[in-house]
Image (cartoon, rainbow, N blue to C red):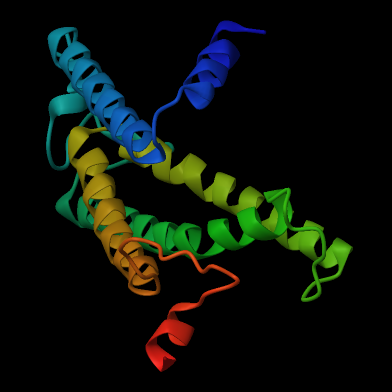
Length: 187
């Protein structure tokens, strides 16, 4: 077993609730993010990543982004591509995950095997190709990275709210086969 596998195995076998596991994961993620951002700021060395707006030295995929027109075009491309990609991911990824990767799902009636295999491959490969160009643009300057982050998180908030609106929350009342709540009320 590799070290990461043993950590995951130990973490999953610990006698702690899922709620606590999730909160611990979020805390570790936040601490790792703070450490990463701190390292980038400390070791920046005066590089061009912290510049804003069009620059004579800003080149994305071989195209100089040295005018406000090009900068605004690239910004709109990043915003639209990131927003649409996030919405597609929030809708498509759960469907693929539950249809293809869920070990409990043994029978699929809505798709043929070949159709689902093609759709899954097409979904992930087109997403990966789009992400190459979006990432390329997003990592050239901090303003593009922040635009991408704000758009994806905004879309994420709306899709999470949508999915959560379809759920119920609160304690689960387990039914006893011998005595249902409706039987008690009826008496």
